[in-house]
Length: 281
Length: 357
Image (cartoon, rainbow over all chains, first blue to last red; front, side):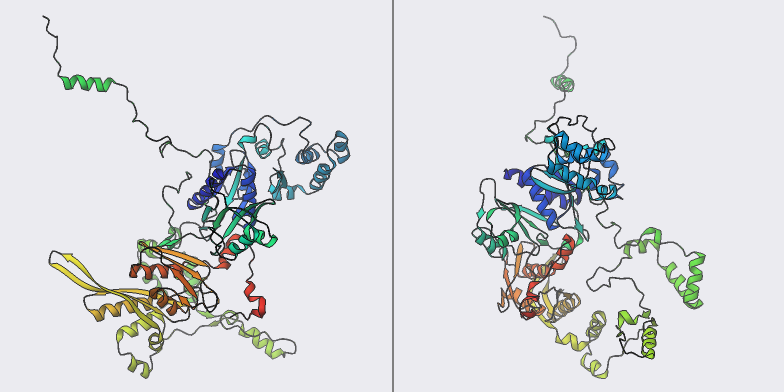
């Protein structure tokens, strides 16, 4: 678990909201994924999508014509290699086969698919095509569930094949994050590390309780600002500090996210730094 | 002994040498590429291109809206206004140049602005004076009266109330009268405000005529119930500067968000110059335990529980300005919750039957 990469993610998120980016990406690791899912649950991100080096179409609002040419410029040809080996019997592949080839659950079970996967696939295959398109399917990645991911049907849209993780494209996967804005101002303004790569800080459940109540615990400052969120890495995954206090779980405090940074004179004029205003953050 | 065919001076020879030599770029002192050469490895999409930010035309009037009335619009206007009024409207609109409208015609951005568009020509009973809906055993007449009452009524023309004799007697000062017209407060209300001068010092302007000194004042004004303003004044005369500062303070009064009408929301920080002011909310009964300048601000705003730190410069003027900035920069929990799309409940209003203060 590299905190160096997490620090980069924190500063990148802060810079991205200063530059008023709507969609940005971070490297795909288990720690980043679980943190992003936490932040999405807390309402800091509008979407978390797993895709390749170009943003997936599903992360754009339906009327974002302005943004699309920009993407197609970057879009690379789809990866030609597909997984055809028998050991790739995942539940997503089962679902795709049910939808495209009309394979029955019994036939799949005979082929040697796991019962659990087949049941999951038949559950989602029964949904309407509209709901599958709009809401997507939950996919499991690195032992975590990512909700509402685009369902990739290889023959119809080969470009969306990117969202399937294969051995050949594993290293090029990225997490695409939709940032949120409210009344012209970013929802996430400040992201800072609490543990450092060279100095990790562990707190037990009692100390986390103190921090949540706004009091200092050792060198960790309390959560005193309105809407502050602290991410804690525990043995039950990455959790919010309030949830840790509720469940009496301790862990390593990772980082702090705030909806407000220090106000300066004339802050209200809402200026964007000129150099960052392009897509070069 | 041979003679060289053509003599060229040393500098000329050097020049040719320099020109013929391949151009090499300057040695890179840093391992990372220069800013211009750097490009993001992965595309980013700006929020404005995704339509997440409000359109940047902002409150200024759009060019497309400045155009002459069509015949249809003129006919509609003629239904509403008399010919004399129409003439006045056309004359008034031609008198203002398009350029002025484009650059200066802006919607209000002050905290007291109205969040909807209305010309206030009608009183709408349901909105302006909520009428009670007749229930159960109401007679037909009542229902009829109620329905009639919900129709918009023409609002009476605004009249400037002549100040009573007593008011005139008390405020012979035309400046106070003007202030009361600007703020909408009566001279009595103005006199009840808590006004206090916090900073005064002499300032000097060096000109070729010599040093010209004047006096600077920084004054705060508040109604001890959630309104607070600060004002600056500068004049050669003591009395003049004081009055300027006081009037500016009263004119600049803005609402301060207060939690339970006694403290602030969470912790806020603001910076003016080298002064940083950190304000934090405290429990009931804590009191205003802060330095005298911030104490005066809190008292004028009607805040009773407050802690403050000024970790850096304690320049009086900047501390007052930063503390005011911090009080205004509070984020309301409702706004944060709405921005994040989450539901919020204040449990202090749930426990102990809401009897917490």
